[in-house]
Length: 615
Image (cartoon, rainbow, N blue to C red; front, side):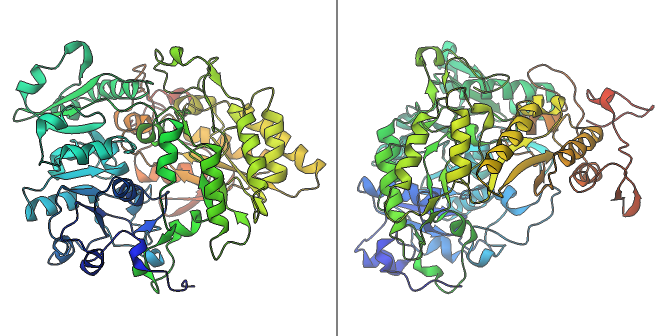
């Protein structure tokens, strides 16, 4: 059902010539192009970027989902900005947004009114940037968001099945702002006040740019990491894997100080300056406290709901970053490993804003974040964190220096429940049960189940078998079995008919058909009917994508089996819905599910039954 007409469009960033003129502007300072529709909400990156620049006095306009197929009038309509164009694919990598794990085109798009597909191109950052540089060759193009961030260096692209170069090379963009842009965004705008000054840009943290051998040759070798050249990494899987370990290790530091350099043909080098330090509480609060309308732009009135907005409109994000380090996840690569938590003041003020929304009925859909229960957590002695490069604070065991107390979060929950107008605040984000400590773990689980569960509690064991879990950087399945027991015990004591909803992944590198058979049998014994299941999508700049492409663990050099072709992947996923001895379909034919395929002895990729397995 369509919403009632919105208030004055002037409350939003302008999206048209008419709205720009209503502001009395002759020319915007910055024009943002986004692959998503424009929702003025702190969960939507383009809105955050626009509001942060606006707060510094810059005139910002946004062109959401421009038509790239016609005469390009959407790219021309606002003319050139005074400072630069900003380009983002939106809240998702466009290829993940467009295609399923088996590379089939999706029929919907959660970031478009009515959920309609087809309103953004494949490789959105590249397409938009090329158009803008062709129309306005002298205006700088700054790319950002998750697509640009995860593709800032050479990366394995699952959809083309090849190692692609940095998006800087393919798109023609002048600069990438990678990661969360809170600190560097305004620095870039100020640096461009007198035009694009490459010497000044070089000095900024958290940016990526192309330079030549003269500049690279002058970099301090003690603070520079030279990656294997792109051409070498593209043809040599071992070199590509080594590059990844260097990139991931450096990005996981509390205070990175190394510049990454990757050589390309024709004397070009992609230079990645070190990122800014983790946001302070005041800095992260500032981004969330900006005057968002929290609503889609009025231009979408009558065009249908935007599914991604409907999902989060009554939710509140309490932190950024994740120290879980899961192999398949992009959160730490984009938001950072170290958690930045908002103040209680900022969170509670946003909760009050939600209660004032016309359609709010008293139920917060989620009070969480990248992980539901990492709020306020950090190193006990951060001096030790400065020397640590572990990709995960939880795997293979909880770091002894991690303060994983759930006390601050429990206090926050109580205060949220006391806000007038709140009937119930649900925890919709996934819970990391491997974070539970002796003092608060049991209390936290009981609190969430009794007071913050809508009837379905989400957790992500991801698999049941140790060999696969180790490659995923996830805890042993016995932890999930203990959680299941505790959850059911709490529900029984309080007369609650709630369900635990576990997430599982098939076709992860190192996963064999026999592993999937064990997963099916073990979850069935626990009386789970699996709903939240997925086939692995190897996403750029994740450990899983590197293992998928190379067939090796980049940290050990050990060969691993990888289910690569779509038939292998379908067979593995079929175990989510069938048990051993039941009927499945293979190659379009009905057959018995006997669990054939690679065996445990083939986990390293060695031949089985006289046949050499790909991987």
